[in-house]
Length: 319
Image (cartoon, rainbow, N blue to C red; front, top):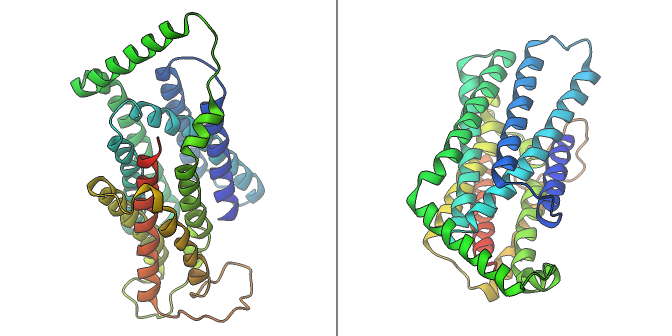
């Protein structure tokens, strides 16, 4: 799980950074279309890999899977950044809507995973159903992107944005003015730090620690088959979705004081570690202080709610 987390987060971060700070040029449509196409090819490769018996070549399977994850998240980094760029042309609450959509996709993925497991007990068949569903979702992304210019609301704000760019170019009078990145960063830095710290705490726990917490009672609501999928992935994504939705209704606290609840979230890290956390291949030394599945479930809900809510609020507060 740690390899998967690193293989997914680092490429996404790197290509987000490149897409923002390196003026490569090219149309937005080109970036989005090629990003989605790359993701489609990665999922086709994954489905093909599932169909092949790789039990005799585990090393090749591992590195092929990891390479596919890296490539997938490189494309996803460009795609996500491009979508946020489109949302930036709209009123600020639509940034929260993009984050809401991201968390909705996580919920959909979790439900699809549980459904694929319940439909068939065979892991290979379940994986084929799961990744094939992802292909249909990506095709839907193609359709919705090309349908977006038909929306009058989006066309209106796109025209306003184009006029602002034209006026800015006229004011520059042909001078090649550099983008004042440092001034922009200083102005936005309080909320950027809040966004960073929200995701720092979230990713320190989810999914590496969260998914390795085992049940404390054999009689709990969910058996071992569904325990991690429900208690970790579904709970986090549903609660993050709810938290993001709340951010579209109200924003608390004000910009000046947002760092306080964001900073307090660091308490969640030791709380999860003292749950029934048993990573594979590691002997636990620390005592288990929280040995109750319902308390662990509540902590997972708090993690998801606070992550979805405060990340959205911080992004909407960012100038």
